[in-house]
Amino acid sequence: MAKTSSIEKNKRRAKMAKQYASKRQVLKDTVKNQDLPLEERFRASMKLAELPRNSSKVRIRNRCEFSGRPRGYYRKMKLSRIALRELGSHGQIPGLVKSSW
Image 1: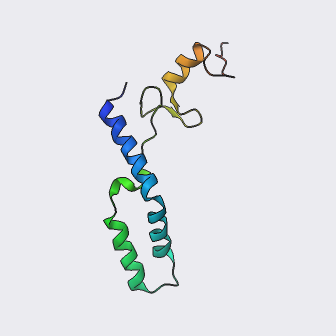
Image 2: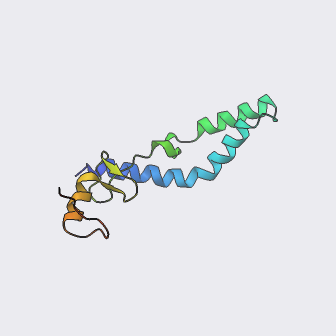
């Protein structure tokens, strides 16, 4: 089980990224637009830098919904490899069959 503080910090980052997503996108589009004057693009770049760092989507860490584990994460099921195997062994994931050969 991951530290509760790490899990909560990641939840705050996800919430903040969702809150600032539209504002960040508008500023990024302004910065990338080559038709605008350099001063305006620079101003947009400075405003983007003033936003909280945790509002960036890339700072969100993929974590297991079951245990909070950050590594060995399967995106499709939002579970770590350990939680996936445990739940699969108990038959709680539909369509998942433990293989043996």
